[in-house]
Length: 109
Image 1 (spheres, rainbow, N blue to C red):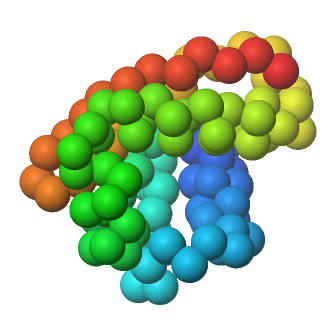
Image 2 (image 1 turned 180 degrees about the horizontal axis):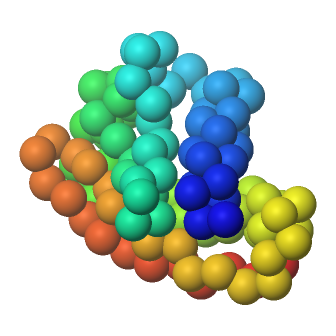
């Protein structure tokens, strides 16, 4: 069950990126989100355009990560509802310029 949950979560999150109208997303072949077997969600901020990273992330990466999670939270809640899960703790690892920032977001459907 966890393996299928992780697979569907990975698809769900990367579709969010694909559906984004933002010009700040990179159009590379690497996934922006990657859900590991340990259920940690890796967010590769290095795939955002360099100008966006320099303007919005580099100076205060922790603040950016918190803001990013607040934007993502409703989309995660939607996923939980579709999957029939009432409550789940997501662990995010943000990758930026060789550094990793880890944060948790508890969301309920």
